Length: 509
Image (cartoon, rainbow, N blue to C red; front, side):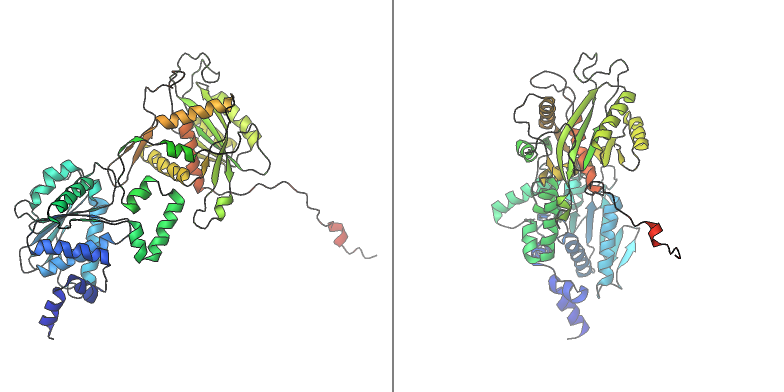
């Protein structure tokens, strides 16, 4: 077989092509996708496919091999491929780097491909164009005569696709592929998946390829172990686990703490009024505003009952989980709560320091946002090495919310059990649960997967009619910050009897 025959033989089969000239063996689930897309491209079917794979399961390798094969196969034609990513940097640039590596590693393409204008790759007359699907990106006018790819389609706005991207494939009815990972049910990816399944039911032609971590794990034991570790750290019901590994869509809004999640927080230990020997404790402080005319506890005749409150949650840190090879994280048991409204921060500082002298916390996490910055600074100076200021931003609060859900879903946050007693501990627990029940979430579109969460303004408690805040809830959530801190088991003091140095001298008599 001469070189031309070998060349044609390899191009007959994209799977053979990838293995022989790139050393890549596509897995069965990757091969199904490649063959279906190529059939639509070669035969001008103009089908629209949805490929929903879990994270780290080979979606990007599949894309790079498909693009390399098509550029070489169609190099004698004026083929135009377009690939759109949600952002230019880093996503579109990462996609270009992956294609460059594949083109350079392939024995048949490494000396043939060229890069033009910083975003176009060419072999012969065939080209692939890379664009950003950011809402502000100006990409009108490009043509996808052969194939249109939308990567991470769950993060591309449907309006942006409909207005600027979809027309690229219109003139030739080019094949379209939406790659991504499950997110909320109102994304572009979710919409196209529903359309693909509806079309399948009409003609029997497969258009949707939805894969879960369980299916990948049956082929790859190392992947199964990786996902098991994520489940152990976050919990199977965590939204990021459900979407990124098990291809389960979630609703974009609604309550963040449904009944089943609140039940996971239920503990069996009693509240405490003082520390217990041998326990490690941490203070979690959400700081509210101060009222110079008010210093009494919350709810006692304040002129401004809607003012934010300062909340302190004291947790006992259980260290047994550190020995779990998958978990390696502590367990947090709420043992005590305090709440202040309008108290001047100078007085608040003194009261917190009095509590710190009693409880001897190993770590203190304190809200250092806005008015909280001063109190956080005073505590940092008074308790050196033990205070972690936490500044709330949209990004940091989102991460805190995701991390707190992981703590809850793995059974590592447990509230005390009051057994119906009419105590201050009971009142504050009921208030905490009321805040959790009223807390709403909004899943933001975008690669960061920002989570906006909190009790909406204007809510009131069901029984008392008082303004409902989220200070106790936010205070509790700060326990997720403790996961990154060093912990040790407190030990009782001991007196070691050292040898008398005078006994070791040679007196010479």
